[in-house]
Image (cartoon, rainbow, N blue to C red; front, side, top):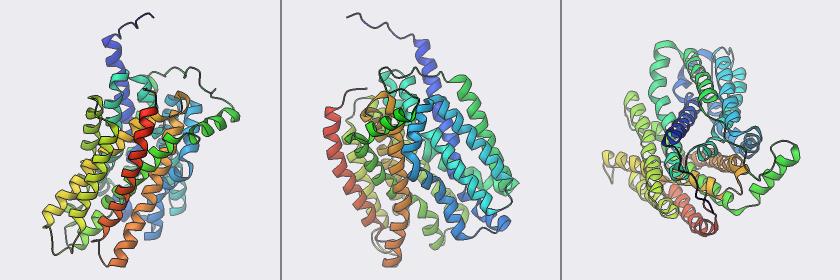
Length: 413
């Protein structure tokens, strides 16, 4: 067998730059998910938005992922990974620009749903595109960076949104993010090379090929386990981070401090993602990182929420526990993204597998916060939140045990 020719370092540098552009484009797309919370008060004043309508606007993106994640993954695989990202960024740019000109809640909701579909076309092909761009020894490292795209975008939106809206209003905020997505589409189209089509895979075109791709993915055990494990993470993470402003406002914390504390709690999740990528790059076992993340989330949530608010751990220690919950939990998504790529049934099902994972991640985000809110309302406070998140972590650990067997039998990619 002839040895493979060594990779030109210049080619490797170009591949890494292209992968970083993909990650940056994903952050730009995810800003549209996080742009709404800072704008709710302005939308209520400008358009008469009710709280119920605000809730629908917040959940529409997640509902799109929950209902159509795997379908859009099949679509992304059929379109091609790079082409899907460019199309999704263009859809986000157009929908956000139109949303900035909307004169009613109904139009804004319809455009928000379109943004949800555009976001799926951006987010689903990205892990597979990164996998095909970079050399194998760099895949775990770059997927660790990719795992941070959502918390980083959330933190940026929570920090920049209030400032932009206070200075210019919500419509220019929508327009600014439309421009960001349009620029990202141009950069991805020009600077990211199109990966070669997968060898020996199912053909892209045709309904039969798309149906076969879907059946191939859902007929494999690995994508199910990764998807369910992601739901056990995402549901509890969003439940805790999403209700922090409510918890701190009720405790008398000033609005400005509440926004900063919440943005920091969301942002530190990126550190866990990046750390997991580096540890995977150095050969750390994936099941070990997953188990550590779930155990850390369970213990940190217990410290943060167990006991009455006016007793037990002091407020500063509870907040440190929230930071640990988010940061150490960040090891989970980075590791699961690497497993989604590894346990996909084939190269031609990368986006389909990530779509299935996204569908269950969205389900977790859709179901987790209402469940925690229901428990809090029944208990008369947030002191049983740790029980809900702990149950999610226990289920996650059971899935890790099953994933260990799948990893042992999976080919190396």
